Structure formats: structure tokens, C-alpha cells
Image 1 (cartoon, rainbow, N blue to C red):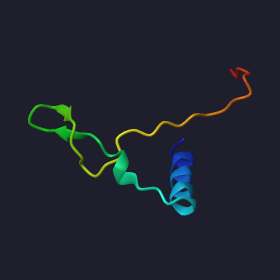
Image 2 (cartoon, rainbow, N blue to C red; image 1 turned 180 degrees about the vertical axis):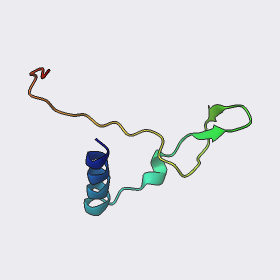
Image 3 (cartoon, rainbow, N blue to C red; image 1 turned 90 degrees about the vertical axis):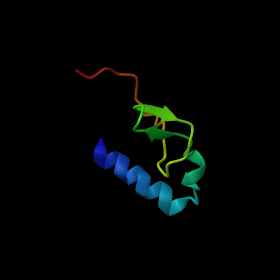
Image 4 (cartoon, helix red, strand yellow; image 1 turned 30 degrees about the horizontal axis):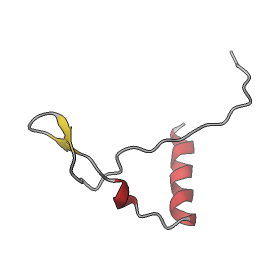
Length: 58
């Protein structure tokens, strides 16, 4: 999974001019061990959907 995620990240950056900073909305507050609504230069969440054939493999 990690290799696939890395490949997706590389292709997104290679083929699209994405301003990742606009997706940075939250930061970590070490003093309170909570998130705060403040930029920290890290993309907070990326959702990735995997398509399947609908078959279960076991």
C-alpha cells in the first residue's frame, strides 16, 4: 500500500499543478495534545477511493 501511495503522490505532483498549502487547515497543539485550526505546512487529510470488482477474496 505504501508503494502505491507514493506512486500516486509522485504522479499528482508531476501531472498537476496542485497548491497543497490550501489543504493545510489544521495544526497540532503540543501544549494541549489537540488539533487547532491553524496552518502548519502539512496537508491534513487526503481521501483515496479504491475501486474493486465487488468480489470478495479470502
